[in-house]
Image 1 (cartoon, rainbow, N blue to C red):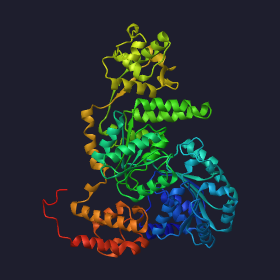
Image 2 (cartoon, one colour):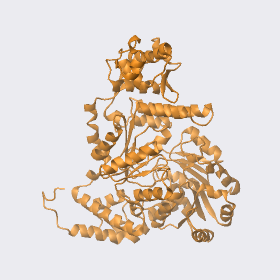
Image 3 (cartoon, helix red, strand yellow):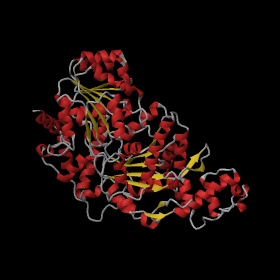
Image 4 (spheres, one colour):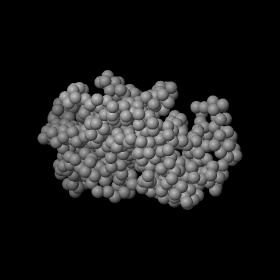
Length: 621
C-alpha cells in the first residue's frame, strides 16, 4: 500500500513515472517510521525523499533548513505542485507568522520550513508540541560538522528533536560527506541508529576541467564566450574584491553578471539572488557564501578562479551545475599563488594543531585532484570512497597529460632553496627562486649577490611556466613548504631524499597549447544548453515555450523553473502533444501543473504550428 501510495504521489504530484536510485528505499523506510541519513548528489532528488513521506504520513513534515533567503522560493515551488506549504522565519511580520501557525495547528500544511535557530525559541517548540508532525527533515546536514566548510552552530542543537519527539522519524540529507563526516553527522544529530543511504556521487553530465592560471580573466572570458554564451553560470572567487572586479569585467564585456558576497548589504544580496533565480542567462560572481540550496536547474557552468579549500567544497559548488541532468561544465583555473595563499591561511587559522592538520589534508587532496594525470572523475569519486572507471569526458581523459621524470628539476629547485637559506640566511618566494634558476639578474637577485650563487642560471632549459609548475607540484607532493606571511619557500623532511637521489619525482606536464585548443570545440557541443539535441523545428518550439514560461513566471513573481524545467519543455517540444492527455504523459507534468498550464501550452504549440515556415536562407542571425 505504501509503495503504491508513494508511486502514485510521485506521478500525480510531481509528474514522474519511476523513482531514481535509492529514492524508493529511502521513502519506504521513512514512511514506515525509520530514521535515515541520506547522501545524494546535488540534483539527485533528495527533496522527494521527505516530501513524499510527508504527504503519506499523517501530519506536517517539518523541514529544518538554513536557507532563509530561499524559503519563499521553496514554498512557491511546492505550491505550484499543488502542495500545502509554509515557512516561519525572521523575514515575516507577526501577522504572516500567525497565519502559518494557524494553518499548521489546523493540519492544513503538508510541509513547514523552519530555520535551525528558530528551534532555540521556546515558543517554536511549544507550537510544534501542539501540532501533528509527520517527520523531521534536516536539510544540508553537513552544516553540523564543526570543522566542515558550511558549519552552522545552530545545527548542534538539533539532537533535541529525538529527545523531545522520539516517535517522529528523522531524515538528515546532504550532498557532500566522506565516511568520517557521515559518522560526525550521525553522532551530533543522535542518528546512530539511523539507516544510511549513500547514492553514487557521480554526476556524469558534468565535465570537469582544471587548467593552469595564466590570465584568469582572459581564460574566464574565453570559457563564457566560446562555450557558454547566454548560459546561466556561477563564478566563484576567494575574495570580495575579486568578486567585484570579475563581475565588472564580465559586465563590461557585454555579459550580464552580478556580484554576491558578505560585504554587500542584505537588500543588494537578496535582489541579486532573486535576479539570478528568475532571469535566464545571468552569471553570478560570488564567494562561497552563495549557492547552498540554490535549486536553479539550468546552471550550465560553475567556474572557480581560485583554488577551493577542500574536495568537499569543490564537489558541493560544482554540483550546482547541471541539476537538470543536461551537459554542464565545472572549470577551475589554478596556480602557484593559490597554493601559497591556502597554505598561509591554514598556518594562520584558528583551532589546534589537529585542526590545522585536518585542513592541510583537505588541501592536499584538492591539490592531488588538480595535479593528477589520471581521470579527474575517478580521483574525485575515490575521495568519497567510490570506485569508478575513466569517464572519457574530463580534461585528462580528453587530452591526457604526460608525466615526466622531474627528479633533476626538483633537485635543482630544492638545491636553490637550500643554498639561499644556508648561504645567504635569506628565504625567497617562488618568483625570485625561479628568476635565479633562469639566470635573470633582476634587482632583487642582484641585491643578494647572485654571481656567487652556484645555482644561478642552472635551470635555463625550462620555461618560467614550467618552473612554476614544478614548484606547484612539489608543494602538492609535500616536498616543498611555504612559510611566513610572505610565502617564502622552505624544505621539508621529505626534501632530503630527493636531494640525495633516493627518491624519484614524477611530475605532470600540461598538454601543449595546440592540443588543448581542441577541447573547447568539444565542450561547446556538450557544455551549452544542448540545443543541438533538438531538430531546428523543435528548437523553435522550445524557444517559444521558454518565452511563454518567462512571461508566466514574471506575472506570478516566481523563478521560471518553478513552472517547468528546461528538460520538461524540451520533451514537450520534441513530442508536440496535441491533447491534455498526451501532455500529461510528459515527465515533470503533474496533475496540478497540467490543470494550471496545460491549455496554455497547447495554445502555444498551436500558435507555433500555425506560423508560416521561414524561407530557406532567410534570417541570418
